[in-house]
Image (cartoon, rainbow, N blue to C red; front, side):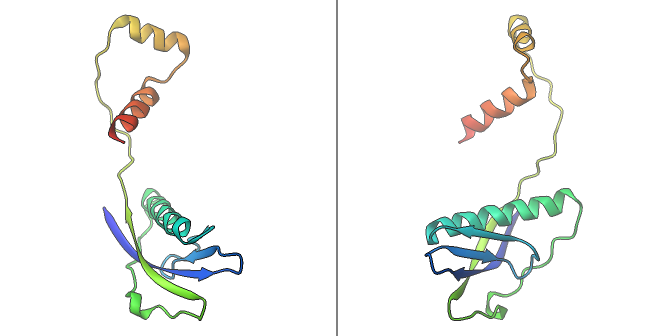
Length: 123
């Protein structure tokens, strides 16, 4: 699912930015410069919304960007978050017996190895 929320960016004396979300009480992040702040804003929003979803809490509707008041050292920007359904699903996989035995010998989690390999492949 895609969500778009207005974020408030406050510039600090050292060139860093503090990011808050007026609609998401407690969702706060910081970036050491504007480029980093934009990345951190998206990361914070995604993690916050994934947490609310995993805890079965209501996700509030975003305010209009025009309704957010700002001070002299602040600006607002819309931030987009893509939320993925991270619930585990069971799949049946086939692999050679020797490979299954080696995974067991090494003490590896076959699920974790498969997830890591698929994540790398999809990047």
